Image (tube, rainbow, N blue to C red; front, side, top):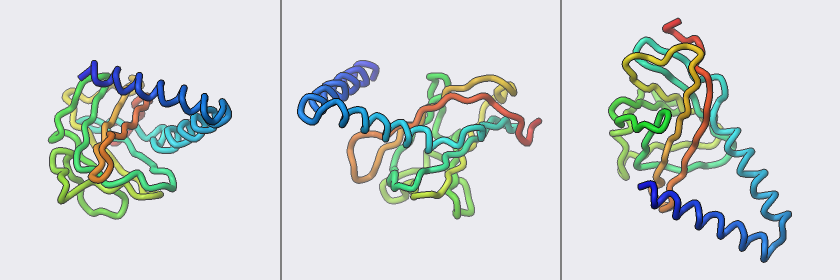
Length: 161
């Protein structure tokens, strides 16, 4: 899997160089600025909180459509978390769903401006003040390339104290 990730990174770098060649460095600079804005707008910084059975965090979702995702994988500090141990609820929904329950018939819609709350079971829960690196890989129903969201934050005090 790592070899594929390197290949995708090299392809992205190649596309960036070609974009700069054909359209100028300003175009690349503006794309980087927009990508940075989107990346910093998706995760609700400070929402990473300890729970009695693990931790939770929230995606704020900027005012754009991220898509409907039929598969999603979550990694904490580089380690995969089983989909059955990750539950998500989009703002307006009554119940949480596990990532394992996602399918093309029942995708996870990440809609403009609607937050998504994630709860992750871990034993033991992470210590308050510990920094976690979280990555979510999302696979869209209609668009083949995966989307990922990656962030680092410190675990704050939640319901578990």
